[in-house]
Length: 107
Image (cartoon, rainbow, N blue to C red; front, top):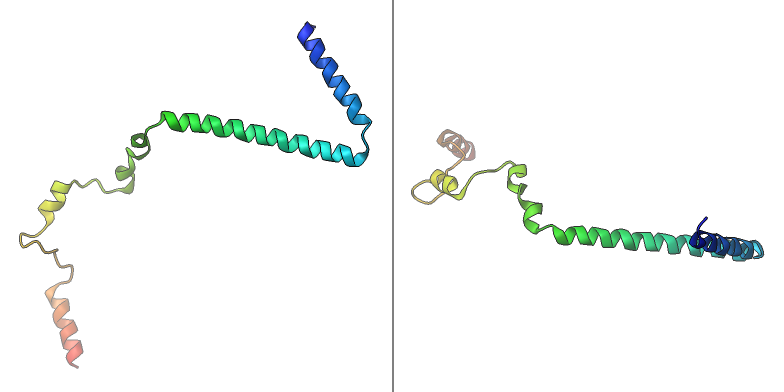
């Protein structure tokens, strides 16, 4: 056992002995405080590691495949080619359905 290990073990034993001398309420408070402190340190470390990773990644990496995943790969040129020459959108309803609606309205 190295000198550092024996010093650490001695501190551990001292803390353990002091813990056994505490009353139940103080033991519970100590355990809860130590638990929350440990979780806090772990979350802080994890958050810092996550922040370091995010700093290394550019926004282009996040959105590079976004359009492809949405299923629409049309370019602006293709969309412009699909537009009628008068600049208006193509009508989706047929003239027959318009006539039918007109006839229904007249009744």
